[in-house]
Amino acid sequence: MKRETSKVNPLNAALAILSVGAASTALAVPDQPKVWEKCAGVALAGKNDCGSLDGKHGCAGQATVDHSPNEWVYVPEGTCEKIGGRVAKLKPAKTS
Image (tube, rainbow, N blue to C red; front, side):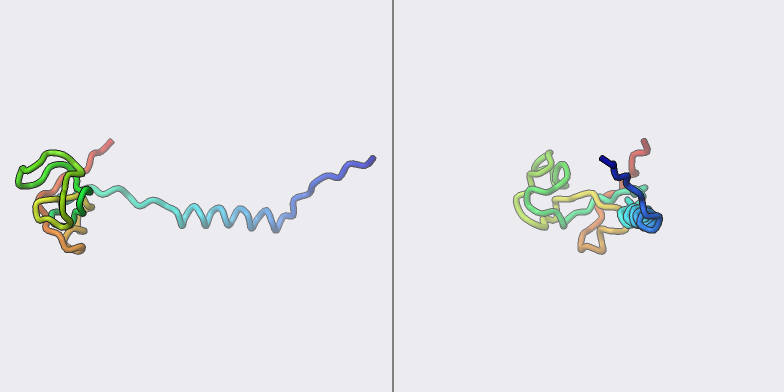
């Protein structure tokens, strides 16, 4: 019995390589921010980062209402005011 061997079509191989290259470019991750803004007034209930600005609680996820002026989340520098928040503090990003 004769065994068939598989041959790769050079055109199909080239197209496969190009599509993988295009996909990896399309899914590229942007550079990490160098500075984060503590953005107050945009956090949703239960979605805040760390304690409230007024000291009513000290943990993440304890915001009880959406868009409280005392609840905040970290966002990349230059983002807070664009999304309707108020910059409470800047924090340099960790460099590891």
